Length: 202
Ligand SMILES: C[S@@+](CC[C@H](N)C(=O)[O-])C[C@H]1O[C@@H](n2cnc3c(N)ncnc32)[C@H](O)[C@@H]1O
Image 1: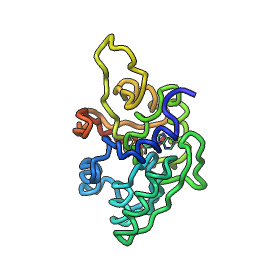
Image 2: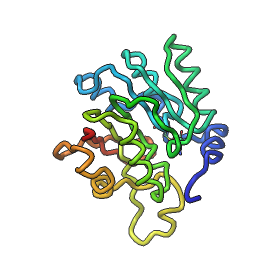
Image 3: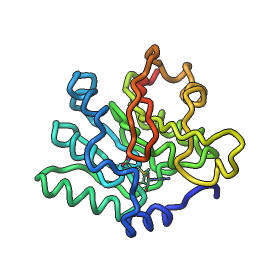
Image 4: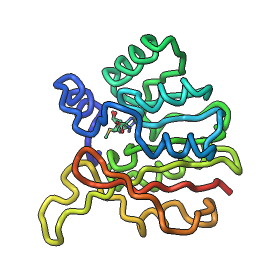
């Protein structure tokens, strides 16, 4: 198997080494919500981590499914939901294996793709398309984590760089309708940026 395992992520949560965690919902999610571009619906959040976005969406009336294979992350998410008196479905599963019983109206993908070794990207993109109904929206925060050219070990661990051209090839236009650029750029706590993409499932 290429890339990090479930144990890798669980250990990071156990040790509190979660530099990717903003401690709040992603500001771009708030912008999409406040602009009305994302309205209450059935939505799935793969690789939901400690759940800031799950809580925000539940708070705003979405029927949310949070998916992660680290139980430690789901426990944190559960605590956050309980503290806010909110409910969401939390599922411990591998995103490369899990199947949706019914298609979702939207997917909020925040840095799960960059957590997967690129060997799995095609399979993951196929999963995402299977989880969503035709006309549904995929919101992606694509991590810009390019290492300098020639640096060794660029595939040694996450975050893997989600280059915009790789994204356009992965989420190809026969299956996904793209907005025209420019795309919003969102600073990430790891000192890099995310590109915010919204794709409509054909
Ligand atoms: C970089 S963290 C991002 C967490 C959260 N989305 C955030 O932005 O704070 C990646 C998350 O994806 C989860 N993850 C990675 N690979 C996964 C897989 N194959 N199946 C399910 N969850 C996975 C990890 O457990 C971790 O919680």
